[in-house]
Amino acid sequence: MTERAVVLARGLGTRMRQEAPGAQLDAAQTAAADEGLKAFIPIGRPFLDFILSALADAGLTRLCVVIGPEHDVVRRYYTTEVTLSRISVDVAVQAEPRGTADAVLAVEAWAQGEPFLVVNGDNYYPVQALSDLAALTLPGLVAFSQKGLLADGQIAPDRIRRFALLDLDGNRLRRIVEKPDQVDAARLQRSPYVSMNCWRFDTRIFEACRSVPLSPRGELELPLAVGHAIDDGRFPVGVVFSDAGVLDLSGRADIAAVAARLAGVQVRL
Image 1 (cartoon, one colour):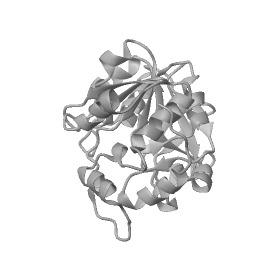
Image 2: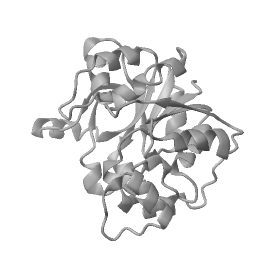
Image 3: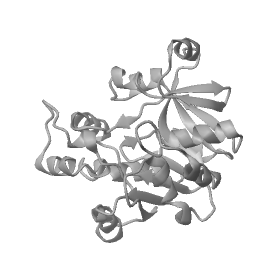
Image 4: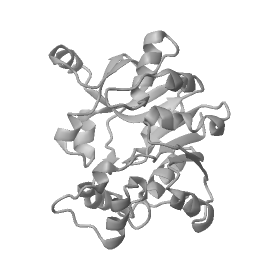
């Protein structure tokens, strides 16, 4: 079981910067949302604290946060402003927001040849799913059921329907389907699982990320890198399944609901 995990917190936070009619934010939340650093939205304490505490609960204690060069507030916070007793926190800098595959390349030296998890900095994942993923002995991801996300999360159904679907062969990933056509959709109804970008990798991912072409959105995207690696036979991708919910802090309208769900959750760093 690996003890390493990476949190991707480099994004521009475009959706978080946008106004959301009816969203009620306090002054500190508004200031953080204006900066677009979703992982540091204050919910009593930075949202990132909850993510790191959940990783620690799952046995992942050597953690690295990928940030931009303008996000030194994150480095200062974990080196001088908060006491860490269960985890170590390093930071890796992604110089430009070129996509999630490029963000993973930023941790190559930090990984030191060991396997590691990769999670989003705007998602709070269930501890059991993280623990099961860390226990894999090959690259893998968590397959979240749409039913579970709807029953046990705060993500709106229309957003869940836009998530990438997973084409599975038992407990192996065949491919990630970003925009399924009618044939795909009919077949994939037998396996209604989606990706929430919760991964386990070994060092083979770095070459996949270096060789991935630009996506239609003009980014170097991690799911595309994984898909090419599967197609090329570079490595298999295992799957662990979860019917639990995931909290998603993508925009200002999510803050109140996420805060309510995390109320009373003990953070231990």
